[in-house]
Length: 485
Image (cartoon, rainbow, N blue to C red; front, side, top):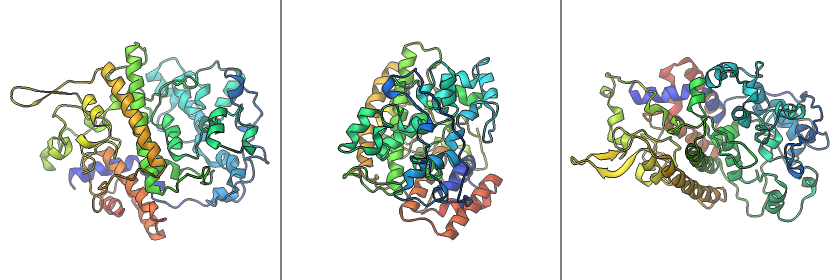
């Protein structure tokens, strides 16, 4: 097996569970009735302005609101009345309900490394349930950096609940059932996030699954290299795949007359733009905090760069003589010795994939800066390379790039920005680096779903492939990967 194939396989092993759902692996049939965990009423916290206070999931879970029986939803059947059981579906099956428990000594799903072990390395003597950096993504972010009163802790224990995504309900919970007129306006006025807009939904998800700067209501969300080194799982986010994975407690419908009908490929592309936009804003925040000498921010932040740049086999002499990292295809104009910035394909270039090229990607200027290009050359013609970009230079360019990506994301969500041509080469090539391999796979999966749900035989084939990934049965993986067209 060549090195390209092996690195793809390593990637897909790491993403096996996500891939199982991304390509439609068979799910167990859910019961027609479920038992929804009992929620005790929680008084609104006084930590937020009265009109934007959180009220907790109990405010949404009444039987006449979103707490109806969820049997139909849990079996994958949605419709115009899905809203009535959306809360019950979320409470019964959504993995976000367990988010806070992962910070405790009693996590509600299996973990490879406990929060206590991570904190012993990351912040000795501090519990994850007391650290705003942890709470900001494992509960409602607005509750992360406020005093831990009894009511606040009770709200945190609900995990990433309704208000973490939809916004604190203090102002909108009463009037939202009978709104008329300009929906976007009333959403802005009351603090209800317009998740009916696919681009806004993707950015909301990326706030935790990629990271986000502090914004007045939320503290900074920055899962960085220090946390990864301490044992926190690396963030591997693909909006379309994650959305497909979740038990669907919503029903897509047009909230505005101009709302487009996006297919899965378009949703995937919106998610990639949102991912890159969010990553750029986080980069700008890191640079700003570096300038302010923030004690918990280091520069350079290694999580900004492609993990494969350091975490790879040093030499594989029997395959390409171990020189594939020096190939023109892999470098794509990047000077030898520079550290490649993170891969967010197809916004950035990806090793082994023809489009976009490094010089023509939507973040080309920022990539050149982050990878240390100086625009100058040594006497022998070799380009001069700085080791790392300087924080002040990175901040301004990152913000400008994020704004440009936000405009592109809005166009894609409106259906007016098509996918760039030539993204997917014929078949599914084995690419030489795990981030680009994984992102190509998810893009191909989205394209598969854009043309309709895969046939049962194809689903079974992919399911067998996931088993092969877990067992590291390399002989079966190539067939599964190239089966996506």
